[in-house]
Amino acid sequence: KSFVSPFITTSSGLQEASPAQIDTASPFSPHRRAIPSDAAPADDPRTPAAMAHGDRMTTFEEGERESEYGYVRKVSGPVVVADGMGGAAMYELVRVGHDSLIGEIIRLEGDSATIQVYEETAGLTVNDPVLRTKKPLSCELGPGILGNIFDGIQRPLKTIAIKSGDVYIPRGVSVPALDKDQQWEFQPNKLGVGDNITNGDLYATVFENTLMKHHIALPPGAMGKISYIAPAGQYSLQDTVLELEFQGIKKEFTMLHTWPVRTPRPVASKLAADTPLLTGQRVLDALFPSVLGGTCAIPGAFGCGKTVISQALSKYSNSDTVVYVGCGERGNEMAEVLMDFPQLTMTLPDGREESVMKRTTLVANTSNMPVAAREASIYTGITIAEYFRDMGYNVSMMADSTSRWAEALREISGRLV
Image (cartoon, rainbow, N blue to C red):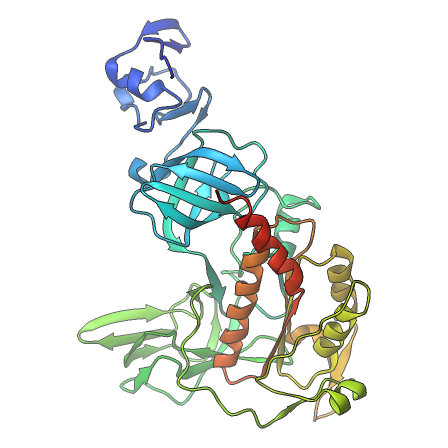
């Protein structure tokens, strides 16, 4: 049991606490609520919020309510159990602890939620706050994906390294997946004002680099009549480039949209596989032929060269784009990809030489990164691959390796009791 002293400490000494402050001051109270502004001393530098551990307070950002918070009851490695999570949804994204660690709800029982945390949980304690975001784990899809390297939950590793100035990823770091301020050359298609458009229709093209054209499609679930389309020019991912009207309601669109990673992007039908996948390895093309749209597995023991084959496919296959997911692999293997791919070139039909990296996206969740994020890295890679598929491109997605992905699932399930 927890006993609360009816006194609170201020800069001027001990003062008798009011009933409201006594209820709030308990670090183990599941009914913590914010202290009114007039209840806090004027010279107290701390913000009037529910106190969890003395000076470690649950501070409420603008627009947040305390009903959106739960509190940690149990921590077991990457698995956290939180109470006070009534109304939460499965696979809802949450922020755990005072460092706002990213987590995802994987089980609900009453008002308790079991959360897998995608960052190191060292330092989490009982009654740390858990903020519900009311959103699923999602990917940002738009220009800027190609040539980039993300971690398992689509945080850009280059940007994090530049901003943090450290070789390690800081806990709780929040960086947009794509640069919202970068300008892109926007070229609309033949569609104009008054034309009807539905989800999946391509209405513009962005020249992401000298190799790839990034087609801008209407996101799934959207439709209507075009009331505005931006003229050709330079635009950022925050600028409105399209406005639709449907049943008297107007909606604006940018070149960027988000998509839940656990939800498959919709398709009309599965095409028949009739085009070979040329791997660039004669022994594979001759003895183990495959097709575009097919699935291949490369089994083998440690050190047999599975990663070498998958990297060769990324370098030399006849795919339009490549999504390479390093799921639990060694960090030096992903470093090798980062060093080799920019130097490798491919010859285009017009004779130009272009870097292979311009058609590649890397999702790196190496073996020294948190185990729970390995599961998310596969879904992140699939979502990015499906996004380019919807543009009409042939996409090769490499998952290296699924055995370490399954190892992560066993790690999580073994802690669920």
